Image (cartoon, rainbow, N blue to C red; front, side, top):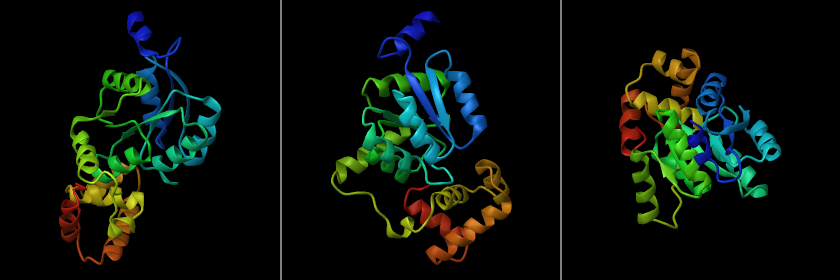
Length: 224
């Protein structure tokens, strides 16, 4: 175990890692799993908390959730990079949608992995990001290659998709995958009534009448 710890850091001692996620139980789990590999120097559940606490903690790597109620990972990344460009970001998210991956990478994240990653794989990904490498879950790397190779200077933009909030996109994605409202509520830690409200908003904004039209629309944009 001691040899493994010694290999982690790019400086003397262990890498300093900061956790940003709006779910306290998930942060506690990551902290417990990574404790033998890195030094977790702080955590935050909101954009405002994250920006302030990262500036104070000066971590090597920030593990960053993509979607949070008050803005999301991209807002954190953009705010911190302006004043602390040396901090590196690794997105750690339940979302594997192309627009989330590409958006975070364009904003400056060094990698993007999903929450299905194992603790050992996550520790290795953190080391690589700290060393300056780019790290992606295998399926996600194709999104980035396609976006930057085909249209390297063109931002990924979709006027219809841009109407939706981050939470509405999450609900839409799960709905298109065949999740029932109850399952979506459990997955996103929200009430069934809130799910219904989000679906109604999405239908109204996209001018559609049912979930089947939404599913086809989402599939056409590779959101599923």
